[in-house]
Image (cartoon, rainbow, N blue to C red; front, side):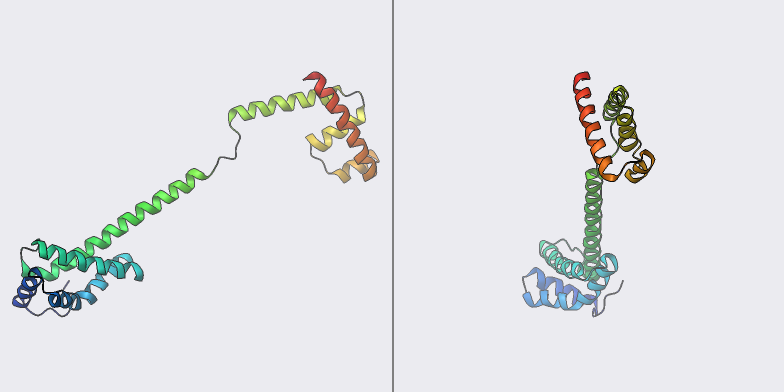
Length: 191
């Protein structure tokens, strides 16, 4: 990609040598020359204005540091060098960001608990249900047995039970209370 504002190789060699010698005006010039092109390159990769701003600054800091260290062996290739640093920083950002998103997703998935009971819980629940049914069946009063089975085990509607057993809602509550009391007494004896 050709970056706008770059004229010839001699100018680039001179610009690089001025940066190596610590000329701050040369550093400002490299930023002025390449900022539009670098912004474009980075934004095409990251697609985020704020990240693009940060990576542009990082690009120029990295480029100037590398030039001062002598990492740019061919000053006439400054444009390609600046462009590759920008592209590499943008790609590195995307890689790190994707890993972070994957880690967060995995972490969120790990936090989702399994709502199904484990095998031990299922066995214990079945055993308790068997004991409850046994106790209900041993209740001496048929109406207590029927009421507890239909209301708690079969989970039938209270109004439906009241109609079929010819009970008012108030009577239902009284019968249910007494049935639960008898059930509890018997349950504690068996257990």
